[in-house]
Amino acid sequence: MAKLSRAAFLGAVLGLTLAGPGQAADLIGFWDSQQKGANSFNELTPGADYFQALAATGATWVRLTFSKWQGEGRDFLLGNADKYQGLPEEDVEKLRRALNAADAAGLKVVIAPLSLPGARWSQQNDGTFDDRLWSDPSFADQAVRFWSDMAKEFKDHPAIAAYNIVNEPAPEKTTGLAENGAMGDLIAWQKEHQGGLRDLPAFYNRVIAAIREQDALTPVMVDGGFYANPRSLAAWPDRLPDDRVLYAFHMYEPYEATSSGNTKRDEPFRYPGVTTLYAGEELSWSREDVAAHIGKAFDWAEEQGLAASRVVASEFGCMRRWLDCGSYLKDVIDAVDARGGHWAFYAFREEWEGMDYELPLSLKPGRFYWMMEEGKSTDIPRNGRLMDILKEELNG
Image (cartoon, rainbow, N blue to C red; front, side, top):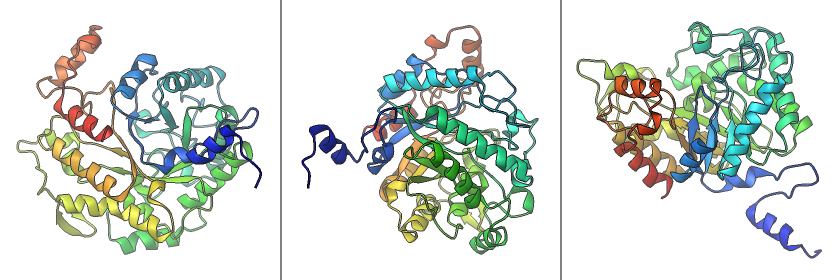
């Protein structure tokens, strides 16, 4: 065996492939040990102060979406999701500046678009689900070109720890399949659509192949179907052939309790104990049920021969003013930790106060928005007990 240089030896120990000229280090090794972070879904492009504040919590990575940012065209980086024609130069530079700021703060970044060609995020599409990507092959072609261009442009950036191809895809949505229906129905649906336009693994394979033509090293993160439901991921017959893939799911179940609608009820649902329809039956949610739902992704990964370090709870959360939010957050984190996966809470200092866990319970939504509008954001109290819970877990 040839003698390794000190740099090569350290790279091997860290699980990183040393970069050649013009090529960033291989960051698949970053994911070999558990990573804990947060989501950044801001309308304003985050800068140095934002990323430094996040790093100070103990987070090691951030899942960064850019789709809310103001760009040259209607849809940031896409130009227009109705017809992708290349990356707008000013948008590219805006994203690069954010990546540079995250890198300076010591954070790794997973970039995650909310929209792709033919799949504009519903909140930017008059509240309407955009199904074109899953029904018109021309949009799949455009999405492949978009990611090829992205990989070519950003493959050398040292902050990027993964490309998250699209946030919460839902090719099942318009087909009549129940989101949390019986597992047999999910598996049958996947088999029925195998090889077709709604075959999410097949779409991912096309995109990854295009990425690999430009960038052989950067990991890729893929969300399961039906809005990144772990049960939809578990319905896939096989893992993807690329070895640098991270499999992601989101956790807001039971949504009837964790979402904003619950806080508006005269008597909000409580956790544990809230009862919902799940897998064709009524389920009264407990800590064990939360773990079982999350466990679907890890069980599938194990069956596929994947390490738990290739599974990511890339979003989870609950409304901060919900009385049971703290217990719920802890149960989700405990479930992911027990299986050895990565996680990122939703969200850090978004312009929306609903899931900003730094805010104390005493700070009413109206007061928060008034302070933001009056330019008093630096005076907003950030001593919420929920963030104390998260900091303890981030640094544990």
